[in-house]
Image (cartoon, rainbow over the protein chains, first blue to last red):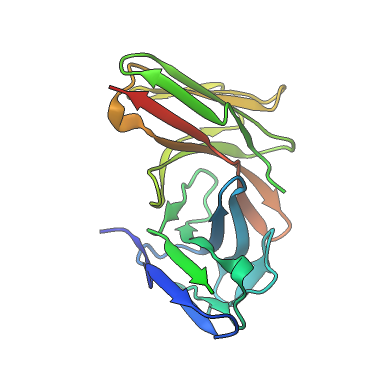
Length: 113
Length: 113
């Protein structure tokens, strides 16, 4: 089954404790991205990657890192989480075709105390 | 910044009625997509309309695109309680590094039984 998986689904952590949210897709998609969703702000893109070893900042990259060492994986790293990073995070992937749609993971709800 | 802006922010209707949601955007696009999100879940792709198309249908969904006005509408006919969700438009425009999807803040649709 074609899917995007994220782990963990829920995470409560404390300020400053490094964490990684994993994302994996099984569709051989070139394009992957991370979004955060906050009430009243919609979905905002954090980082995206056009292919292996190619990443670029989205609209709200501050405080986040990503890597794309393999095509299927695109982890989101918070080196020193802060309470303003409490949010619902979504990973997504798609092929880079002109009319291709984006597939979303189930989301990771992160709380930073 | 958000490219697409949905209107209205919230819509409440009775089962069987039609629901219309609008989306406006600012810059040139390759295509525009509509997504649905059940509360706290991942986004699910509904329909994609290319910049050279004016109207598209999929089941009870009808999407229009007016590139001269930079706007799109999503019509759900004969709505059902199960259609209750948030609906987002996303614009696909080419950046220097490749295409990016930019989401609006969404319309919360409530269909009352």
